[in-house]
Length: 483
Image 1 (tube, one colour):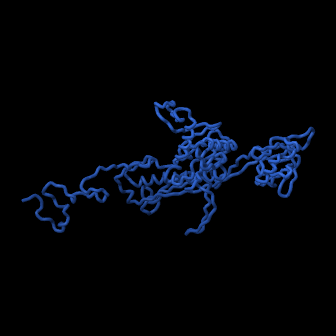
Image 2: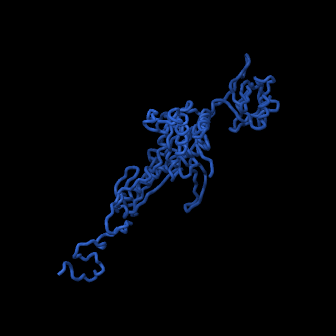
Image 3: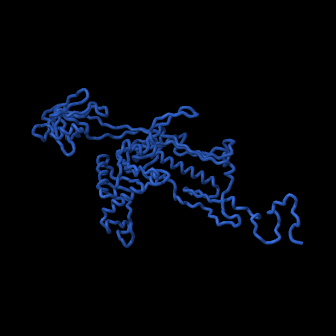
């Protein structure tokens, strides 16, 4: 008699996998099929790589604001700061009469204030490279302008040079005060000038996000080992999703501070009429109050000249000595090429950098820092501008120059004067609640029982704004070319 049952039990005729086999052999119906796991074999167990391949490397783009700024609490719906005005008196809206003996300024000026010129002041009046030095004899206020009778020092007639008079028809003249002159025993000398300043403000926005997973998926183990940028490991897939939600939200916190725009707008949804107002992010602040440089091509024959144009503009602003360049890949390489052309080492200006400029040791075509004129620049690639899922997909912003300066202000939270970077974050916080980065769990899964929902909901919240102080010292590099 052969081994095994001679007949199959009733009702099991179609279940061959439950029938003992009298001979040695491999049968697919004896084993768990792997076709359900999308493997091409149903017979042999494949070699399984448990860990994910990190083909995109570190996917986070945060780090920019941590490098250039700071984060400080605030207990208000608005942050307000003032920035000093110019020390010296200058105008670029000056016109002249046909004789060149009277100059005029709008009254009041664009800032709503009467022009700060008076009898006895000495001024330089110019257009291009044509200049005259003049003495203000008297001032007469009119309905829309203030007229100043002048006497030029450097012309025989005492009138403005004819080139300056004719230039008025095309564009206004420039003027600045360089001193004064009064006779012996004069009275009422000088012109009282109040210090000027400009006030700026910004408001925080509330950012929120959530990750949700049902209880069954929490209790299910996977075959792929979890790995994330923040060191999470294990075989519970929901942990990976939760941690990726967290680091994605942290990216949103930085991206919002860079990209946000102030705009008052209303809309209506199921909850009624709502208002969005935004906040002024870094790019918006620079385009509104800072410097914008278009279509830079630093690696061309005029590359160094283009960069020197930026330096000349920085001279007109705060002239902060140390600056940081955060650039996309193409602009970073462009500056590398510009600097390499100036290097005397090696053929055609090639730099061998940290290897003592020895061609036999190694070749280094990158520059992390350089000095030009009286300025130091520290250059780095900004991942946010290179990543294909962020600004790298648009390519209109090429980089930003951030001054490494600080301002001294009184901090009400600390009760003392502190130095703050020109670029910094303010977040809502008090003794009752810290809204820098909140995270909490609701539901009935994961040991937290707040409702009868068979799920775990992880919530993220932050309320913050960015302060871009002294924006006139920032430079935004843009590409305005169109394909």
